Amino acid sequence: MDYPKTNKIFTEAAAQTKAEHYCAYQERSQQEMRDKLYEWGLHSLAVENIISRLIGDNFLNEERFAKAYAIGKFKQKGWGKMKIKQGLKLKRVPDVLIKKAMQLIDGDEYLLTLQKILIKKAALTSEKDAYKRRYKLHLYALSRGYENDIISDVLKSSDL
Image (cartoon, rainbow, N blue to C red; front, side, top):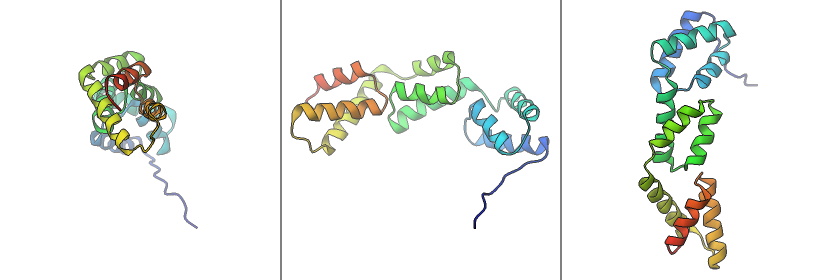
């Protein structure tokens, strides 16, 4: 029988070092780091001490994380603003920082990305009925996190 691997850390100094490496590898939210520290078996006082030191040493920065997350998910995965906002809220990023991160997404590039996604999906859709085809494309774009009115505008302006 396989037992789950436990990554228990018993000293705060060791956890601090490991947390710094964890944050240096990739941008992290405070909540992600907090969850990881609890997973490592630390108690709440040690967790909060480590989090405050990571913020002080600029290993953790919520604004930097929100911007990197928004741009990364948009450019790499083609996510829409609604899905990105939802992801940031799940990571417990404050609404003010979410708004700042959303402003980094260029409107023209956003529409162009949606259009590319819809064209790619239309090529894979075998539906012959034009109404059902548009409906399927609309649902697909909604699932990718794009706004209803923008999807409608793009679908009307193109022959998909």
